[in-house]
Amino acid sequence: MTISHNALALPIAWITLPFFIGFVIYLLPKLARLLALSIALLSAGYAAQIFLMGSPLNIQLLDNFGVTLIVDQLSGFFILTNALVTSAVILYCWQTGKKAFFYMQIVILHGSVNATFICADFISLYVALEVISIAAFLLISYPRTDRSIWVGLRYLFVSNTAMLFYLVGAVLVYKANNSFHFSGLLDSPPEAISLIFLGLLAKGGIFISGLWLPLTHSESQSPVSAMLSGVVVKAGVFPLVRLALMLEEIDPVVRFFGVCTALLGVGYAVFEQDTKRTLAFSTVSQLGFIMAAPVVGGFYALTHGLVKSALFLIAGVLPSRNFQELKERGIDPKIGITLIIASLSISGFPILAGFGSKVLTSKNFLPWQVIAMNIAALGTAICFAKFIFLPDPKLTFDRDARLKLEGETKKKISLGFWWAMVILLGGLFEVNAFYYEAYTLENTVKPLVTIAIGWLTYLLIFKKLVLKLPRAVEKFDHLIGIMSLMLILVFWMVRV
Image (cartoon, rainbow, N blue to C red):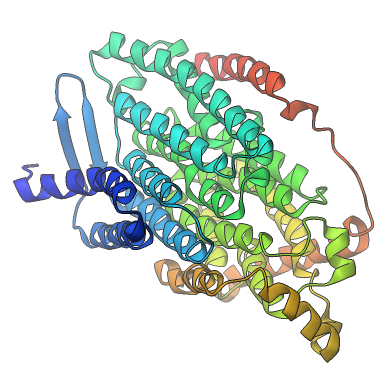
């Protein structure tokens, strides 16, 4: 395929522009918000163009090294997710007094995440993932408290350790093929595949390699949590999905880890009594759905990115992180409505995009995945029943109590919050257009039955059940040790 200079220049300019604008923001701090929002909107426009392209775009930058970019519909879904989530986060922060430095890091993070969505070689992917680590660390530690700095350093150490394994694997791929291209993975020794998978699994928050994620996402500021769960972890998942689609032999391995992480995440989430930790473990689980059916992973990533970002932003304005305290204090009915809409979508309720993505994903499961993924879907319904039944219906009729809560909430909520909800929750209605064929009677019954069973299970069992799962596995030294176990597991799988 012959590529015109214009076709080549556009993706290169689009990738490099965020980094240039990031430095401009630091020089022109008064324009920080506008410039950051412009970059996010530009990505949305580029994603729209990708969907209108007739065929994928393949760009060879350095033929001798196999440095390659691929722009296709899969990229488009992930880029659109990044654009919408970043736009919502910027609007959410519009009136919060964030400094130019914050917006500079948001833009750099946005650009480096986008880069991972078009990379098709291991070395350029490595560079993009490392830039993500630095930008994410600076955003996590932005409050400059002892706690935030430690959480940020913990994330950076785990990430860098994982990427060190990955880099060794990339070098082994090049040694075997004289190329860093993804397609060379199959002709590489098993240890190369194992090391690369370990790096990506850890970076993406997958299975036990992702147990760094709950603390990092729950302890970060809400807009940062929204970015981390909405798009950043997908930078580690996307290459795995791409590899599964490119290399038939890799597909079963990716699907296996998808099933495992879906069950692990939801198994923790249903017992959590902290709202942000519940959402963080749910992110681990939902990433499993993306990997369990790679061919439709892009659509699922889009719907999950929108809903999870919205939920983290909503969690940031709730009066408490503890479910029991929230039940006793109550929450503003307006916030309750947004919480219910987002929770219904991720549970797979019709009308919202989460329904279409779950139907489409379930149609692409292999027979051995079906039972396990149905259990994960049921667990998701149980998990988000905690949020759906959180708002107190009595507040609708108790005017004094309602006005008191609304007064308390107004102090924490700016206009930017509602604009963010328009983008994220509105998107959950709009992206139904990608798979409107899902709305048949046969497709509708199963999700509704799953949700109903999940709600009943929550009301009869989990609502009264208090069980604290051990957090020892989330300690830093254990996280590094877990990487060794994962390396052995992946090596055994690829050898078999």
